[in-house]
Structures are given as structure tokens and as C-alpha cells.
Length: 147
Image 1 (tube, helix red, strand yellow):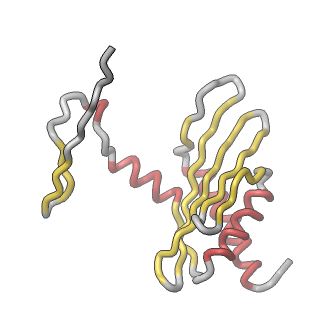
Image 2 (tube, one colour):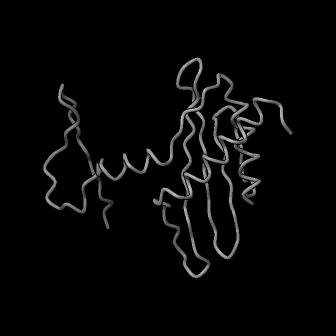
């Protein structure tokens, strides 16, 4: 059997990004409304110029929630963690510099019940809201040197 080669051609114009005709709506690559809403739940800006401080605070916050840190890379600004509690939840958090005084933190979670073989993305705002609320409190305590 011959391998299939797929070529995607995109044209960038002054009015945005366009692709060829999409004959099947299920194949639409860019579903911006739901993706933008999900990203707004997953991302917060923090007023600090120190990305390592945020990374340390993210690790502590994840551990407070019962996550085990699988991988942390300060150079990439990335942390991966897993929680096992009758289910499996994987969380990846990235920290990137927005400007000299702000860092952007984005969390992305996947949930997998033990009875399922497939993980699915967490799209509900509640877990992200709880994570960022705890992270904000931890950042406040860290900024005021409270142990």
C-alpha cells in the first residue's frame, strides 16, 4: 500500500488566515469560539518578573492538590504532573514571560477514568478556577515571605 501524503496550504492575507474549502464541518481545523473560551479558563497573568518563582509556586500548589510532579523544566518553563485518585488526571503548566513585569501561566488538564483507555481534555472552568485561585494565594504568601 502506498503512503498517503497530505498537503495543507494556507494563505495569509491582510484580513487573516484562510484555507481551502472545507467540505466537511467535522474537519474544520479552527473552532475559535470554544478554543478561545477554553484558553481564557486555562490562562492567567501574574505580576512578577521572576518566572522561576512562579514555577516553584506552581510545583508547591500542584503538590498541595495531591499531584506528583513527573517533569519540570525551568528553561522551557514547563511542569507536568499526574494525580491518581480513582481516576488519572494529567496537568501540564507552562510559564512564559509576557513583558518585564508579567508572566503568563497556562494550565492544560486531561482526565481519564480508570475504566477508560482514553484521556479527554478538561474543558470545564471549575478545576482551572480552583487551581488558579490556590496559585494566587500561594503567590501572595510567597511574596510576603509567609511559610
